[in-house]
Length: 155
Image (cartoon, rainbow, N blue to C red):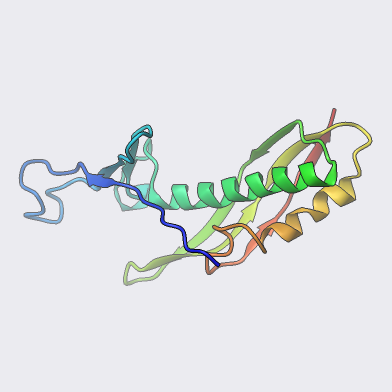
């Protein structure tokens, strides 16, 4: 086993001039400013008054889960001789918020649409999804169930 370090720089951008002098005195915005990478402008969840045009932590978590799954799927497909010509996902995460304000994800469903050539063994292609949870860094790190509803388009 080996350990890996991952870093990011998160910079709060929501000081309107008074800092956190009052709960409504500041914005819940920040940037992810990892050196050498594009800046990602962020806000909190729109349900909490965040900017709906910016990414929030929940968006980024479900996107990371989906991307990790996709990258492993492409790897496994390549190893299995399954040609993938296109891949897109519209994942759905379901969360809950308690009266105290504490929130969490309850479950996530990855819903990839995968384009494969005509004649592809779709049962074999679909079976690959069930192996990914054993190796995907993000899927192995979350504490909620992740399911898969893949659709296949043959060209």
